[in-house]
Length: 451
Ligand code: GDP
Image 1 (cartoon, rainbow, N blue to C red):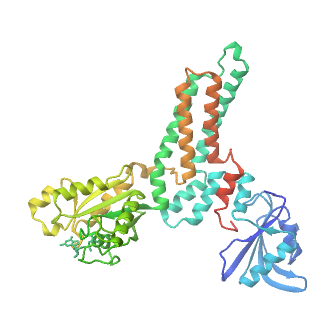
Image 2: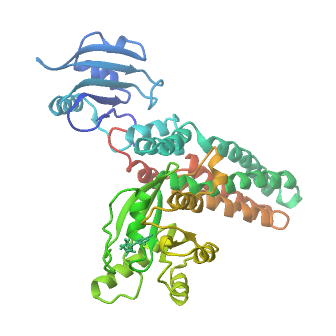
Image 3: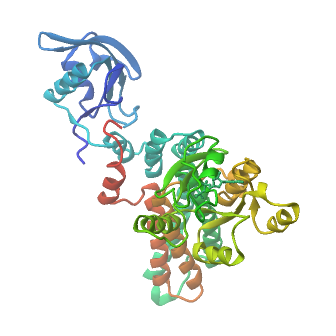
C-alpha cells in the first residue's frame, strides 16, 4: 500500500447521469488537477472551496467542470483531495480519468479511498466497514445501524475498555520481570472487576447480533408442511397478493419460491417449499431434499398443517422430522374455517390457528413470526453488531477473558499474560488496532472502486 501515489476513480455510478464525480486523492492530487486545469490556480486555493473551470488536454477542451478542493488533512482520506464534478457522459468521464493518469495519478483499487482513510486514522476499522454497510443499506433500519456504527458505535466503547486492559497487561508483564521476588503489581481484584465489565459489554454485543443480522440481512423463513396443507395459500395471504401458484393437486409446488415479507421493518425471506410427505416420484424427491436443506439454512420454520385432514400420527411424525436445534418453529393449524368451535378450542392450545384462504388471524400470525425471530428486549439496544467478523472476534475475546477469569487466582503471571494478550488481540481486530494485510485485503476488496 503505497500512499505516496495519488489515486483516481469515478465516485458516482457508471453510466450516463447529469453529473459524474471523479475523485483524486494523494499528495499530488491538487498539482495533478492543476496540470489539466484552466481557471484559478488550484494550488493557491484554500481547503473546502469550489472552483469553476475547464479541463484541458493540450489544446483540446474536455469539459466545463466544478472542482471541490480538500486540503490535507481536512478530507475523507486525510490526504489532498480534488473532486471534479463533470458532465455525466461516459466519454468525458473516461477521458478525464485517462488524462489524470497520464499526468501522474493511478487507478484506485476497490475500497482504496476508505482504506487510506483507515490507515491515516480518519476511521477505525469497524467504521470503515460501516461505510460499506451504509452504501448497501436498503431500509431505514439498516441505514440507521450503519450510520450509528459509522459514528463510532460500539468500537469507541470497546477501545476504552481495551486501553484499560492494556494497562493491566503491562503491569503483569512487569511482574514477569520480577518473577523471583513474587510481587503483584496488577491488583487481581481490580482486574477481575474490569474483566467482568468487559465481558458484560461483550456479552450484550454478542446477543445483539441476532437482531442486527436480521435487520441487515433479513430472516430466512421456511414454510413447510404436507401437500395441500395450504402453504402456497398462506404465502399469498402473508404477502397479500397472488404470487405462488395455488392448486388442489398435491405436490404442485415442486420447487421453492422466495418472497420478502416486511414485518415492523424486518425483512423475512419466505421460502415456500415442496411438500414434505414421502416423495413418490424422482422430481418430487429432489423437492423434498431441498426442503430439508432449506430448513437447515433457515432461522425460522413455519410448519403448516391441514387441521381438518391430518391424523395425530402424521402430526407427530412431521414434528419429529422437522424439529432442528437452533431453528425456531411455529406450528400453524390451517383451514380453521372448516372446523367447529370445540375443535378450534382444542387446537389453539398447541398451535396458531388460522385460515389462509379466508385470511383469518393472519395479522396475529405476523406478530408471532416477528416475536419468534426478534428478541423484543433487544430492540431498544443502542448498539447492534451486524458484522459476522465482529461477532467472531467478540466471541473469541469472550473465550479468552473467561480463561483469564478462570486462572486469575491460580495460574502464574506468564499464563495470565498470555490469555490477556489473546483477548487484546481479538478486541483489537474489531477496531483495527490489530490488523494484517490479509484482513484488510479481505475487507476492502468488497468495496466498490471509487469508495
Ligand atoms: P400447498 O400444497 O400446501 O401449497 O397447498 P395450497 O396452498 O395449494 O392449498 C391446497 C388447497 O387447500 C387449495 O385448494 C386451497 O384453496 C385450500 N386451502 C388453503 N388454505 C385453506 C383454508 O384456510 N381453508 C380452506 N377451506 N381451504 C384452504
